[in-house]
Length: 255
Length: 167
Image 1 (cartoon, rainbow over the protein chains, first blue to last red):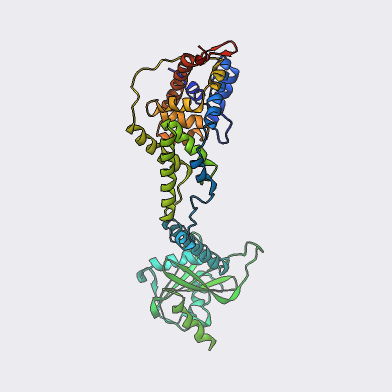
Image 2 (cartoon, helix red, strand yellow; image 1 turned 90 degrees about the vertical axis):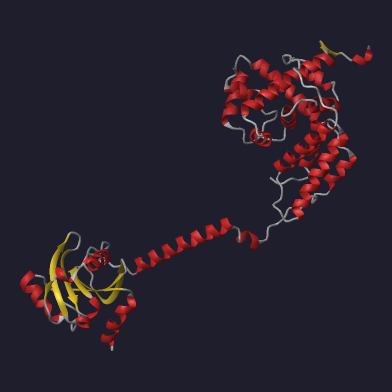
């Protein structure tokens, strides 16, 4: 039974062609330089002679007329519209659109990010899973809790900004989050809103904690938070829903 | 790869090797090219080079069935002779066409495509729908059968070809 090399050698290309695979090239090399070199040379000469004779097959004048016209078989140019409506092109286009959308969203999100944004998003997850019974009941103005946090928990500058200071609280707690550390959480009567106060994070570029007085939004799991950072402490008002629900509270103060 | 006027003579030669008859080759060739032109006119994707040869092959086989059929049987084989190129030189293209067209299928198509020296191995296997081992066996035995036929019809004696017409 002939081995694979013999199988390939028997059909070695008559003339060198581009794209001859490696197995064929190796088989030819072995045949040329091996014991069967003379037999292979005879085979090549035989094949070349037959191929030469094939190329000498005369082409009838009537048939040759068919070759004169270069455009005998028109190359159909597919119109752009048809190409664009090809299901494969449509699928690729949609996929690119989705990828582009996600990329743009991530870039947009990143542009608005601040050093404590990751922590803030984690606390939005906490907000979504918190039940009112988990907090100590306390009915007062949110702005009045700064003293409580300082006196009871030694949490300095855990202040509620003026925009949200007049909101009525239902409960509060201070807990130690594994990533965010000491967090003060306040449950409000209004729209089941929650406030969080937590230590700010240093800017990795400068190594310093840089406060900001403008409001910055973060989103996670259908919750939206608006964050402000003062005296190394972040304050976040969190609400279930979008930015639009928080905007009125911020504008109220401006007026 | 698009078909151009460069490929068309090869297509005709293929038809000639398959049928061994210039009239049948011309008919198969023209029908194939006409079919390609009609497909292009119907706004279908332009046929590629392999399509032309695949289409022509079936047309040639259909035309071949209309005439006298070669008897099936074991053909003699002989080792390839060092004088084979000189023996082949004595042949005319018509004789070669007659011999190849008399071979059974798929050996006929295999020999015609192989000796056209137009296609890569992968393309030939695709056209013939054969495995590499099957194709190799067909060419190997075809070559030896052709040598036996050459020895019988065009013997070569040390630099001189035997011409039966001189006897």
